[in-house]
Length: 500
Image (cartoon, rainbow, N blue to C red; front, side, top):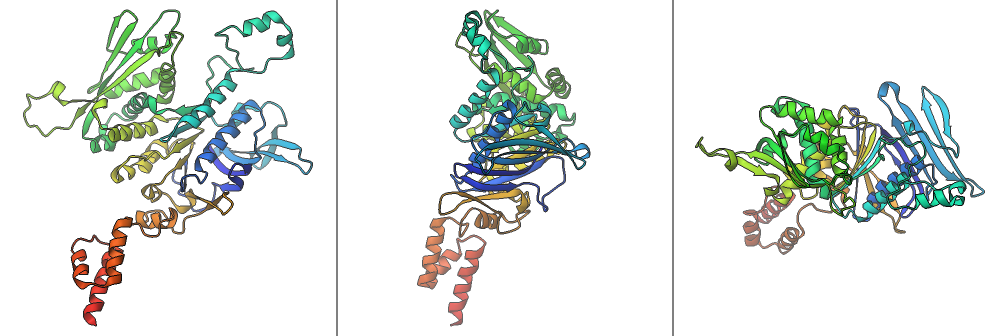
């Protein structure tokens, strides 16, 4: 799935906004597409994300969207690619018109006109992850899931008191017409409260990817955190017969090394060592892929009729790097629990594992500032890991960011700069420089509306010293100033004074 164009005519601050994702000058080394949305807070980046989710959810349900738009995107591999064009606009008489066209080999085929759309012409998944407040996203996705699980009752049901009473019983869940029992909603919000499960699924996918540890996608991440390898994990469940859906639990029981039960409490232990690759591969294969495994675990976080979740605890264990030469010190002294990592380390490992977990295709993936709380060294790894994981997948990733380091890994054609005009409407610009491999400080100046990349306090001190021209003060500052433009200016001022 690759976006080509999104035009929004009238939605909040997005007025006559035309986003083009298929311009020349992009890095086209792999199957996936990657674009960054940047700009000051409140410039409309997250609004674009939610607008895309609303459009696709309404197409899924064959509903009108509250705003007018044109959406173009590609589905399929490059050899058999289809261009889907969807438009919802109002004509001169203010009548709403909606149509979808499929273009393949130059032929256009109307897909629907006010009739049910075909899921084969929609992305397989719409996935969102945010490091900010999840409240607005949760409301949006909860509404989508409610719409997915229910349908408007027809007059026949409403006029039959028995059928109507049955549908009003607690626990009765209606299915959308033609919805298969095994079908899951294509819209997915990855919540921060599931970080351990996300990390686990990404690590298992990482292990299953390649038998050689140095070739696994997360190897560099482990090294930066001082970890040798993944030792294993435990899952703690609370199972109530006839109340709990035990399908996922039973499948995991068959794969666990140890199963300890006491009443309704169940602990599953999975040991990893030299057989980590084959064991991870077996677990992943049992569910299909790591994202499906996560979906199954995610459902078990939700409270059941008892008011408690089925999955109560996830623990992850690693062997840490030690410099101790005493070979007698081993076992528990070298084991590190995920919970013992700092908040920043947990976030880094969890979000990088999230990228590895998304081993899916034909999907739109929306990542809202995934680099938040990362140090600069970690930020440098994000796009490279994305490339390793996504290179064989037909996905489009849209990422909002405030990091100039991330933008140095893509061309300026992959960067959409959001700015507000005097009326508060969002406008799209391109960075003023070529961003690929550019100095991050140059990107900062050209993209994030910053005149000078140095800190404001240092600039005030240096500018005051230059204005006053006190040689003693200038020489004192020259001894402590770092390399760059200001050092050049101070040295130039001193040489100018000496010459005069």
